[in-house]
Length: 337
Image (tube, rainbow, N blue to C red; front, side):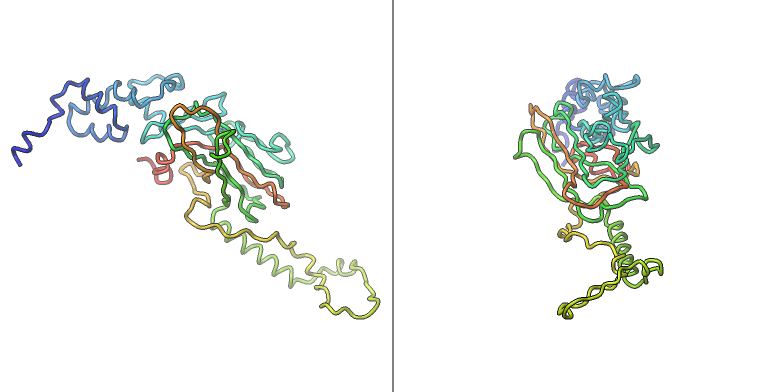
């Protein structure tokens, strides 16, 4: 064993420039682990030469302040996103691998009827990083779309897009059926993937369904007010008695109309329901896409419910986040790594 230890290479004897070149081929997480090996390694792992390899070329222009080292700049961009594009987008880096993360604000999205105050309201919200969020007041045609240039993202990366949203107490309509979501490259139909998701979480779905059943049962048994009974038309039957059963009692008219046939229940644990983020917003995955090396074009993301004939309200849209699938996904809900 002693002989084997003497024959193994001692990397600490290598020149610092050589060690820096080797370390730069790893990941930020690996560099932080190597820094604890020895003082020599720590010096190299903290050097600007190493951290320059993890920073995008254009990130220095996005920094709003000066930093003492590129390592400090890196972690600042991981923990404190920077607003770009006149405040309509947010830029940050994935803490694990240094890949670019972008959030398109609600103002950077295309929202059908979004400029009509009767249907959507825009205002400042203290929990949002952006100047405005969009609150859905009342629509039945629900359509949100967003696009992003592939040049703003890191190549050779599997990305996923997420709708970042929340609800108000006036939430209505989204418990009726799932919405359609999708992601794909513009002009490349083969790359587009669509699926169905529920925007309310599972607990809210169960609570609303119980509330609807209670209202229907109560409407069935509650008598009509005397004023409404007096206003009911008197119908004198003519001809033979009907063979079919008599119509339902008048009080049933107060019950909610029968909804459209329910779609098959979505499986649990497959990303079909939203999750709560560390910033207290909710998010639902819209889909994923692979950014290949040298790929150019635009990626489109969508959230749709345009076939339902019922009204929807009470949703607050902050934006759509695009981040590496295997990066922040690991730590978004459990705190910093």
